[in-house]
Image (tube, rainbow, N blue to C red; front, side, top):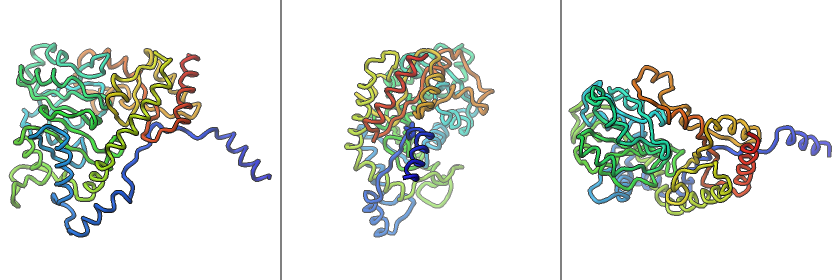
Length: 379
C-alpha cells in the first residue's frame, strides 16, 4: 500500500501526461516487410532499382499525365538542386516569403542565389504575385526566380503564379513541402517533403514534380554525380538519390494513404468541432475539411501566441511556433534583403501550432480544447 501511495504522490507531483505537439508515424514493420523481401529477392539495393522506379511512378500518377517525378534525399536538397538546374544567374535575387521554414532560404543560398524576403497575404499567410510586381524597378531587375510557399500544406493560388510566370517570364518554383495532399498540378515545378513529420513520410526524402521533362532530367543528373547514362560526370553535381529502402517505406505509405487520409480528416474535424464556439481561434481555410496536413496551425488575436502557449504548457499541452518569428529573423539570414514585413511580424505573434496527429484521441482533443479555452479566458 505504501508503494501505491508513493506512486500516487509522484503522479500528482508530475501532473498529467503531456500532450505532444506532434506524434509522427511511419508504416509498421509488418507493412514494409513484403517490400523488403522484394529487395532481398532482387538483390538491388540502390541506383534506381525497381522499388524506387515504382515509387516514383505511383507518385507521378497523382498528377496529370506527362508529369515527371524525381525523388531526392530530402526536400531541401530537392529545392537546391532544382534551382541549380534552372540555370539562374548566380547571385540573383529569389523572392520568397519571410513567413516560412528556414529550409527555403537555405536552399536559395546553397544554390548560389540571394533571398529577398517579401511579406505575405495576411489571410492566406502566403506570398502573392503583387509582392513581386510591386517591388521597385531596380530590385525587380535583379529577381531571377520566385519561391511561393504552401503555408503548412495549403495549396495557395497556383493559377495566379502561373499567370505571373507567363506574363513576366520569371521562373516560379513552389515550395510545397507540407502539401502532399493538396498539390495536384505540376505545371509549376513543385517540391514536396517526405520527412517523417509529414502526412506521407518515409523518414527523410522529398521529390520534385514537374511537367518540364528537361528540368526533371537535369535535376536527376544533379542527384547522381552528373552522370548521364554512363560513368562520366557531365556537370558538377552531388549524390542525393534515394535507395531501395526508403522507397520500400514509401510504397507502404502509399498503400495506407487512403485510410490514413481519412484518419487525418477525422482527427482534424474532431478538433475543429471542439473549438466551434471560439471564433478567435482561426483555422486555415479548408484545413481538415478539404485537405489535410500533419500540423494544426491556428491564428489567434494579435500578440496572443506567446501567452497562450505559456498557459497551455502549464497544463501539459505542448505547442510550437513552427516558423518562429519568421525566416528572416534567423542569424544565418540577418544580412538578406527584405521589404516591409508587417504581416509576417503580426503572424509571428499570433500563430501557434496546436497538438495534432493521425491518432489524436478524443481525450487529448478535450484537454487541448479545455486548456485553450481557459487560456483565452484568462488573457
